Structure formats: C-alpha cells, structure tokens
Length: 616
View (spheres, rainbow, N blue to C red):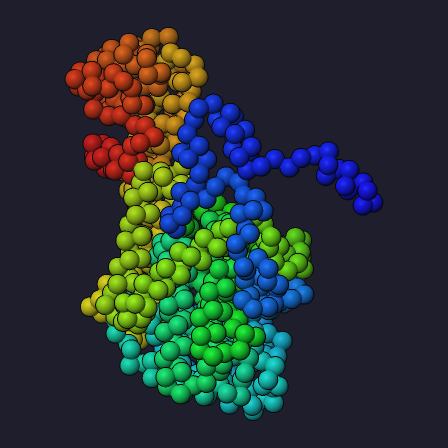
C-alpha cells in the first residue's frame, strides 16, 4: 500500500498557490480578481475565494483537540449533544406547566420560563414545576432583575424540599442588569450588588449558571458579527472583574457565567464566531488565575429576529434553519429557534412545533449531535475563526481601554455603536446591497398581509422604563419595506406597473424581470409582457390594462430610439419609468423623463417617491 501511495504522489504534482491564481486569472478573462472574487466583509477583513494548508501554518489553535483548552473545537470530547430549548412566557403558572409537560414529550429537553417579577413566589414555583424532574431537564429562568435573588432562593428551597439530587441539576437564572442599561438606556447599576449574593444563594446548585451575558439583544438590533463577539467578551469580563473584586473566587465566578448569543444567517461566519468566542473567552478567564479546565464558555444560541420578515414569512424557516445549523456545527450548549411567525403574532402551536422540529431534524436525521467539531480542519473556517477572533479582540481591547463595558454602556457608547450598524444595514437593504429574500429581492407578487401587523415587543418587567441614555434600536431589517407595502395595501386601488417590453429580446426580458421584482416590493401589481412591435402598441396595451406605471424595458442602445416616443405618446396618462441607466440618460431627462430604476437605485426611497406621486 505504501508503494502505491508513493507512486500516486509522484505522478500527481500538487499545484502551487501561484499556479491556482494564474489559472483563475485566465478564467476571469481580464476581470479584476479583487473585485470579482474577494469577499469584503462587514467584519473588517477580506475573505479569499480559496485557502490552502499553508494558510493555516501560523494558527496555533488548529493543533488543539476537542474538549481541551482553549476549547476552540468545543467543550465536549466524544459527542456534539446540545439542549433543544423552548422558552415559555409565564402568565399563568398552571397553563405554563401544562405547556412545559406537553413539549417535553415532543423533543424538548431544556425549558426557559419568563416570569414577571411580581409573580415570583414559592407557590408559583410549586405549580410551575409540578411533574417536571429537574435532574433530567435543563431549567432556565428569567425574571425582573430585582427579583432574581428572590427567585434563586425559592428554587433552592423547592429543590431541597423535593429531595432532588442538587449536584445533578442543570439550568440557569438570567441575571444581567447591564442588558437593561444597553437596551433601555436606564441606569440600574445598583442591582449589580445582587451578583455576589446570587452566586452564594446557588452554592448548593453547582450546575446552575446565574451571571449572564445577553449579547443576543445586540444581534437582534443589527450588530455586526464582530461587534457581538467583541462586546460579549467585554461584557463577560466586566462581570468577572465585578465578582472577583466582591470576593467571589475566580473559578466559581467562571463556572457561573453563561452567554446567550444570537446567530444570524451568515452561515460560515457564525460558525467561526462561536469557535472564536470560546478561544478568546478561555484566554480571558485564564488571566484571572482559573485552571485551564474551567475556562470553558457556555453558550445558548438564539436564531435571529432581526432578519425575520412579515411578508413571505415561511422564508423565515430557511433563515432559522441555516442559523441553527451554524450553531449546532459550532458546538454550542443549547439552541432556541425563533418561530417563523414571531414578527407579526404570538407564535402559534404550529410555529413552535416547526421550530422544535428544526433542531430535531438536525439531531435525528442529519446526526449533527454525533460528530465533534465537523468544521475543524476546514481551511476556510479555520481562517475565518482566526480573522473574526482578531477583529473581536480589537473591539474587546478598545472597550477595556475606554474604561470597561459597564462604563461604556452607561455612557451609551455601546448602544450608539450598534444603532449605527443598524442604520448602515438598513441603508444597505434600501439599495439592495443586503438582500432580504421575499422582501427587497424576489418578493411574492400576489401576497397580501391578510391583517398581519408588526408586533412591538414590550418587556413585562415593572422596572423596564427607558432612561436618558440611548435606547437600542431593534427595528428589523425588513421593517421599512413592510411599512411601505402595508401602506400600498391600504390604498383605494392597487397600483399596476406595466412592462413595455420592446427591442432586444435578452435585454428586455432581463430588465422586465428586474423591474417586476423592484416594483413588487412595494406591493404593486406587476404585468410582464412578451414584447411589442411598436411603442404605441405597448402604451395602448398599458392604458387598456389601467396601468399606473409604464416601465419601458429594452437595451441601452435602443432607448435612444424608443424611450422619448413612448414617453410622448403616453403623454402623462401614467407614470413613465425607464429600466436601466443608459448612456443617453441626459437626453432622456432633457425630454422630460424623470424616473429611472437600475441596480444602483435606492429601491426604498424610489418606491416611497412613487407612492407619493400616486397619492399613497
């Protein structure tokens, strides 16, 4: 066998990187390699179209093993099991208990209870956990930050009275006052004093996390991936400093930490983010004198709400499925899949069932839970892990040098930076540089809202009033397009956009397809056509169809021949639009033609202007 291998290697010479580049240059036929193939990410670095083993030669983390420091390859050595978690809002303890028991029989092994602070009591816990065996189920609790310590004491007392094996129980209590500072701009730093008593209250529950970093709220506010990573690290380091300065042992503090992070649709980058997060967190915790074996990062991943849409909402399933795959392949501890209908209603039983099954599919059908660190060794993902780690670390250091995460949060710097990213992403969506499938790209032409309206989320905490600092903007990426389309639906008449296709067959078809997608995003009825012999024939057909907008679709060269006669023949009886940006645009504008749509157009602003002209 060794002789055969030697012969094969001698007959097939491995090409060098330069040889690959030379071949690519030939195939590009003069096109710019940097512009055509290099991905310029929002994270501050470029991604090459291919990687080779030599690109990883200086990456030390590549040599680590799963379950070993610095845990870039995950916390587990022999499997990739994660908790399938579903959260329940507790308005009525008995009803929440019934729902919990039901979904435990449908594949869930982790429960999250969201309890209003005023409801926290022993009686509530007794009713809520009736019939649930906490040694077999991960239990997670969220309540008002000022009632978190009270809830911890009630839980410990309940578990002891029931005789449960305290050392075997797994779960968490979500204590994170800084999240309120970031999201609501309200200074609740006085609540931070409860951190040490909370840790002490849970001393008999070693498997319970209680100091949380909820960077998922940054993800849901449109933060870039490197921002969520860098800020999450600084956030966690703030709590570690706070606890150790208060006299909590560093190892105990590290064991009580939990990160609730978002996961967006950027598939490979999100895999890299979680791997980089474990790598960097291990290095941070080690500096507190914690043994390497206790430097693990524990993460619950939430699929993003930011990119979910009201229209064509089943596309949300595609988004959340790839997000779930990213989280599972990156070895997180638990996953919450956001139901597809959350943007416009309280999730239905059907939507929650599908969300559960999205995870069960990956476990039972794809066996994602069987293999440890599938992504490990991938040249591209290892490179992304290193690159995103460097950018996240830069941001972490910047926050530390500015005085730490709490100080920056109180100044509003964190919220302001994330809001700026949200603004940039909305601007990118408006110009279709960031695609939202089913919204600004390939919308469903015939879909109606059928009464759906965007849901505004209100915190049930009695201390959640906003403060004087900036408030986190959680406006979803598709929200402005949805507002536009909903306003169109309310109009007395649905605008009709008619494609006047003429001339070059390939160009008129391409531009008609582009224009239909462009205009349907506003809820217009679009009418494509096979082609007309004359512009007069096309205009007459448009008027017969009662068109409000006539879009001439042809080639750049032919616009000089067709556009002005069509515009003049239409004579203001409908809005006239040219599909493209032809060289003769100035001549067309001189003739009175005002409207052009093309790949560089600001789609959102253009459609708003059209609605205004149509009286909508």
